[in-house]
Length: 297
Image (tube, rainbow, N blue to C red):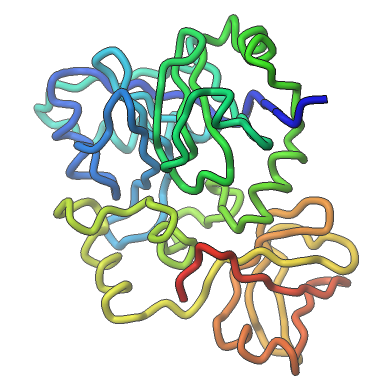
């Protein structure tokens, strides 16, 4: 049986940005360099508060004179509303295109080869009437695709992908230490660099100003990172998201998403240094943190 798996991500929607001013409009707002998006390259980016706190994350792909933003479906209207506040006189239109496009995750050994994609994060190509691209965060996650919604399932099957489950995908994502939107980042509180956005290609430091750029840069260049989101092995019942993590009775972090004995936890770096002598606990579980290969700290 093929190792190729595909999953239509029902929790994701698509916001379409059109108009001749779309590049300049987004460029001054989001954390990545929108000028680098092209039919053969997709990006991962974030939209922050002026104070540099997380509001939204999304994947950005270019197709037929439009940018397609793969974002959280339940929060798409909020993203659309917040972006609209900055339109001013920009020749830009923002439209919910979720009825037209489905978002899919494609993973498993050989997924990129099956789609004709390079391993370089963000590499994109036409696929089944839409487009597919190597996950811009980490190629080990496989690919994502934006597909005509009516034919998405048939297109994935025709390409040789077996149906995957959210648990399958979460297991892969969590083992690699990669966050999933507001499941892992706290809206209006989380800081990008505590959650891997730098190493996972979600911030461009050469593009110039964007919303929240000053505080994000200050955090980086003054080495103000005191916490990191990390994968943890869970021995015991999986703690619910938001469960406090302690070490020797002291606050050490907070639990995020989890599945099948694995989870993500936002941990204080000082607690990591003392983890052998002061084990991490959350609820009735003991946690063992693992540093991803891609993480630089």
